[in-house]
Length: 336
Image (tube, rainbow, N blue to C red; front, side, top):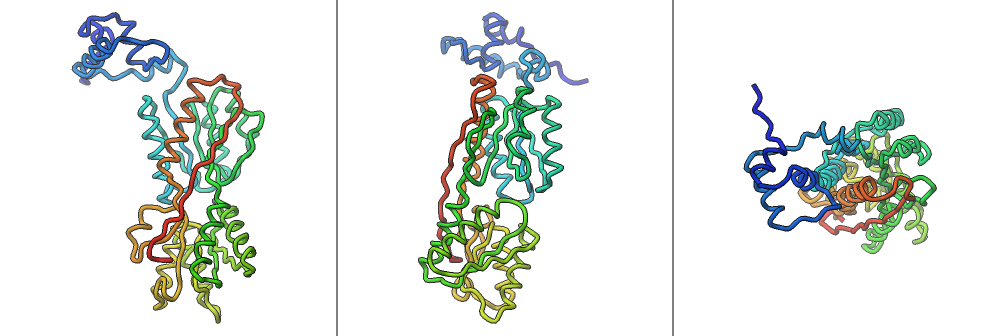
């Protein structure tokens, strides 16, 4: 038989305060203030009794699930678990749970997320979407579900209460290409997959190459992953004149490129330099360590969660959408 759950009444009795006081304090009320001594007595009593809140009862009372959804396109890409962890870290500080949903870059799966959200399972959805437009989220916002999109470029605020958080991938890819140009490379090829943030990253690469008076060279492979990097790099190595540097659209493709170059007996970076994008954990433990673009995905997730919690707990339901740009950094390591 499961152990009996401690109640707020028992916490109030042990702390010698009213049950209303316990309810307000343990419910993370932001409208009441209590003396520090009272707060400590209540929290100490809750710890001693092993009190845990009844989430179902809270949901019935507040009409909130105390749950956020974090939607990512590829949970197998290490960039996204780090993003989810950031969302979870900030959400848990405020008593919220986080559910991760994986769409696999599929438009139908993205649309199913909307249906899932309309069922009232979460208070807010934080997501990376590549198929849905702002108007697709309107039913969610009218139902009181918060929406925050993590984007690869700036989005204008429209009439809907949708927040946008973004890293300028065009500017980041431009900076990454200039980094290679400044090291004397002129034959720089870019390898990219299909699906994901490649459009803005390829545009940034093209911009820098044309700006330097050079001809862009983009090889697109179906996979936006290690296998895609292997396939695209093999294609480059079949040419009579190989590039002196490869800029990959993400770190997984860069890892595939490095594997292929080593298999062909080429030295990195002496024969061919390699530049990645995302700064996943593996980038710093590779041999040689991968030069790349850091988007601070853990911080990105934390900021996204805080913006979402502010929207669903503090702002009016029709408050206009907000946008915020996040930083990136060129990380210089051994591969380029």
